[in-house]
Image 1 (cartoon, helix red, strand yellow):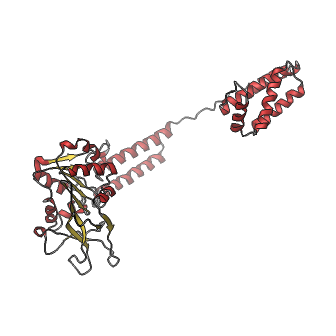
Image 2 (cartoon, rainbow, N blue to C red):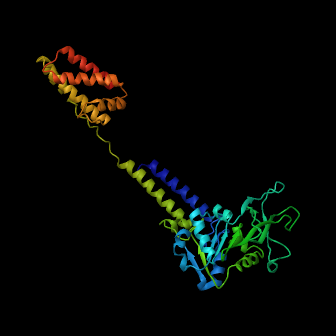
Image 3 (tube, helix red, strand yellow):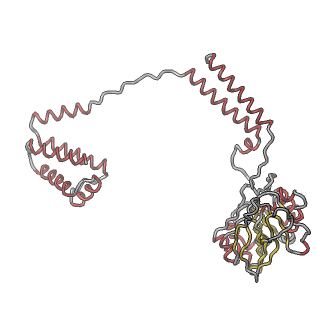
Length: 402
């Protein structure tokens, strides 16, 4: 390694070390990703709610990592409440019907999500819509529960802009409104235009609960002011004497990781150590490879004698005026060309062969037929003239050029 490369490598390492120091001492930014993971302590994780619910239910709390459709195959052994909380819960049609059949037998389905399966909505005679206020750019919701025992003088608030869907159409006969919301209006701290976002509907012998603001179950909402009272009030609809099945399948953030690099990238210090290691390996390969590289000698390829050999053999046949032998070799070479290039079977040169050869070589059928007839004619004769040989050669070359 020359002095120039040593100086360059030292400058790169110094710059990288400074970069690592600045990154390591920089405050960690808040992660606002809506993970809804039960172990995630980020603002929009469910660690607080999950821990609270698990501690309250103890043995009546089970976590499910499989898709609901698979779980419903063993639904006869499941009794209780199936709880789904995520930014989006997208049941397909088969999954929706399986869950509703399970609910009809006396169980409970609780879904907290911005979006609900269309099959579920159609079956329950519900429709969703997105609420927005043109006079109010920010969409920070105010929430309230409808039951008198859960009502408060001032609504609960979430000081973050979130998706604000609501039930625009309800089955008023079977649906019970449990909660409403409104977007915060400037100068007001109460709900002026309530929109339904939390309902209960009977289905068979069971119940279906739908909540359109899953953020109310997150760490950020529960730890903000007295918002935990809202979430705890919603919890009362989950009966203590029933088993709660917590879904881990429909989650933006899974509770397990299969990548062996997860532990490295989880810590910013290990992550930057990994980057330094990779850069060091790259620099070592670059400089060491440049120092030890040797010139690759040029190997002159052997001359191709095939053309010269063909000219020699052809000259021998021409001197003997054995035009039939030359034509025979030329025909065999042409048929081999059709077999290898166009994957044609040349064992029978009939009308079917002529049609296929015309399609694959883009030659008209009449030209192909004349060429095949010429080949058959020459193969039947004991000897041919030089003119007939030249005519055959011209037809074959013209046919292959198309």
